[in-house]
Image: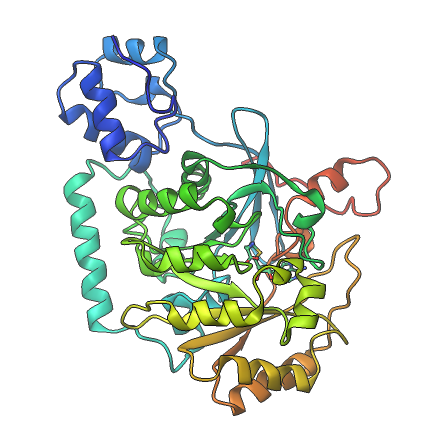
Length: 425
Ligand code: SAH
């Protein structure tokens, strides 16, 4: 008999947990690899699909309450710029949003990944022979453990993805507790943490829907959707590990963004497997930051920048600071100078994001000229600064716009019923 599984969902189990499940069931050890291949590489949605396992074993698993735990795509909105916003539902009916940005600088110009630097032609780009050889080693390692690549794709998707510009933006919590004043997700409050399986499940669902498969297809991943990953730390770290080890996304292609949970930034630096770090700065002094991001009362700029200075960066790695520009609030030339002073000497870059507007958000999007001036001041002070293009604004998929829209879009008579579900393929 199979004892109490550590969790009833296969998705989210690491090697040790899957091995324990298999051994408790009295099955040979190689079954663990078959299960993991099926779940993370073939991305099956039910036990019935795991044809490498004997029928009798599958039935026993079902009887003991084990499921794959795959995430379900409940709705899909396609932007005119190609961005796709997915509404992804879990077993208890809760849902989050996950965004697919197929090309251009989508996400990665703003996410601190190497592909982004390539896209920007940045002088902090570190691509080259070494990076490529690391990537081939990574592919070889995965090939050793994977049995098949399930996806067939047409040439154009494949080519685009191979350029390494596609990015998936995933959520870490249902809602968010951080209460940033310019963010739509904050209006929801936090409903619950996602499990590691639910975080990885978003990626699997999108990869399957887009018919792409890392590591052969180069995918970037950003933990920048709904929620604060560092307030769901354990699950987030485990998900990151599973995404690297089992799904095949390279560490250097993943970035996590935090509002500034300082003790967790310090913990994160000590993780053996971890994405790159991005910090949402959004203000140039404590008074302003506390007004925009109340968590600054608890972890002020001195503590935050101190943690960034102590952060153990790997070779060819830098920290990304995100700065949402709010017209007339934090976008003055003096703010830019303060930011330059704060960040001087740090191995970092700044991504500037003009506010993505939304109902209930009482701030204005600054003019392009203001954004460019801000960028120039930073660059003149020697800080690499990039302007991040908004992706999928028309479908409320851009930064800070996630979740609220489904409720808005479905409430009758609301002005925001501009959203149209994607045609079923
Ligand atoms: N909680 C994490 C990750 C989610 S927010 C964090 O705070 O970093 C991802 C990014 O979107 C953050 O940099 C945040 O500052 C930015 N953001 C939030 N609301 C926004 C808005 N309305 N317009 C543009 N960017 C926004």
